[in-house]
Length: 126
Image (tube, rainbow, N blue to C red; front, top):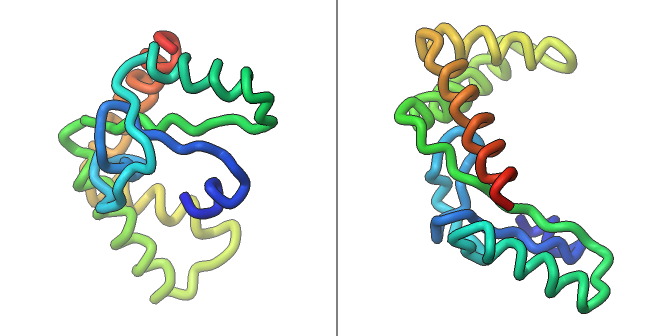
């Protein structure tokens, strides 16, 4: 978030005061800005355009799938395992994906699909 702020990119959380993690609605980080509906996002966008600001904006939509927390936890565990096994470079991603799928008994795929569908729905509303 600090990098985005440095480059003047507004970051907002959709319907929450906490900036969501990728799979989980919880990150422990306060959202710099909260928007509660597509109209709020549209007003922010048009205000930016009226001010001639040259940047985009990030709207973070929380993943409310029940498996999100366990998937986030599995990712962190798999990253630790990868480091302990000296897995690096292009081998990290396949290792992480396989370990997370195993650790969550496939819930990671279901959670990811729920995330994509919710993002698409919110994006279409915006």
